[in-house]
Length: 561
Ligand code: KIV
Ligand code: ZN
Image 1 (cartoon, helix red, strand yellow):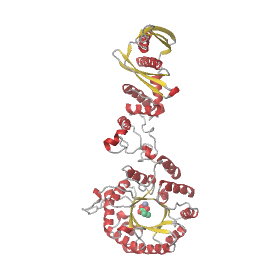
Image 2 (cartoon, rainbow, N blue to C red; image 1 turned 30 degrees about the horizontal axis):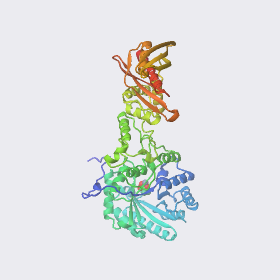
Image 3 (spheres, protein in one colour; image 1 turned 90 degrees about the vertical axis):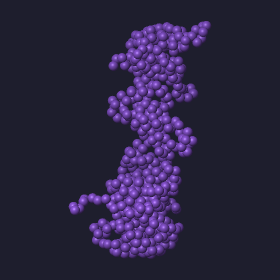
Image 4 (tube, rainbow, N blue to C red; image 1 turned 180 degrees about the vertical axis):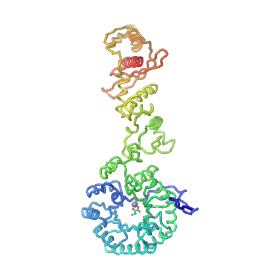
């Protein structure tokens, strides 16, 4: 048979797997590897000042374990460790971690970098897959076992020379997910014995990486469950997950592996790291947060964090990145906008109905919890629906467009958006509203309206109207059983349009002395449907008559087309 180019990795035979029926209820602990795995994969790695700023941001977010670099691999990383320790930048409750290969001179140099540290984690790794052992290093299981055990003994011996420091040990069998599991288990047991200092209080960290995402997430979870079941010293080890994102499933792999028993997660903010990156800790942590799990990480000013990471790494955060992306809390489609609008207005009922305070269509978390803004929730483009457009005007300008007028407004916004050929801002929606409904171009300009109550019956009105019609001043008088009806009767005789006023809406915009009345007046045309005009004035009757004039100008404009 011809050898195929690719083949599926064999699934794990474990019919009694438990993880699929478990639910995550507690948070893992977190370790940021931004300054090592993340930094080594940047086109322009950060300089020491940038790394320090990043480190301080990680501390503010709440990370208690931070891999600060690979101190034996470069002078810059070594110096960065020295700077953190000598200049006292490390909070008392934070461990800094340094990566090393299982080679004696690199281990020695790592310990030099750690001198004087209060809390440190020495992180040794060795490749354990057949692929690496055979094709890269020309070694085998025996050789790898020997190197790992010798390295661990050396680390133990050097850690013993630093009794004033709390030195922990992390061991990573690199390419865990491509490694023969029984061998990996034996290796980790041998490392555990060689370290000999693991206790429930100071556990050995066994970091089991999906160095390259070669398998689907369920395989990773199977392997983690299998390993945990077979490892004999469960109480004295922390099982750490370290997923990369080559198949785009690092978050899923991490979540399933947590269900399988993982205690700790290594990753980076926004998924920086080799190739397609490490698992994105912002997403994993906020997924848990959105299910009511306290994570110990504070992302309440996520936009600021994203801006800082973008500035320091030179890498933009993707628009559609969960939680942090510019579009994470926007809705473009009309039906989504409408649903959000309704859900937000009925939020107070959510607790009673769903037993949780936040349950809003299309928004699984409250953007405010991440320091993000409601005002930007709805972006308008030519696909936007009437509900969304109305929501923008209400949220940003306090303008409550009546339901019956919303389709007409939507048509105008759509025309504008199509003409400019892009998504439009809420200011532009407001401009369309003002230009098309409040001050539309047209032949009619109100010079003045003087309503006078009848001497005997004050509800009966005598009105005098003066209008400029295409540069010619015209005057009319008429009566009516209210100021608007008198106005309509008088205007009708001037403008030559047969219209009536259906019931109209009024609204106060603003407060106190600055409040303006807003009138939304539907003009009914014989056989031609309804056209809305909007007027605003400090006096409600004057606002309504302005709205009538605006509506007449809209009608004249439509007739011309
Ligand atoms: O991805 C990986 O395997 C690593 C190890 C060094 C832990 O980054
Ligand atoms: Zn990695």
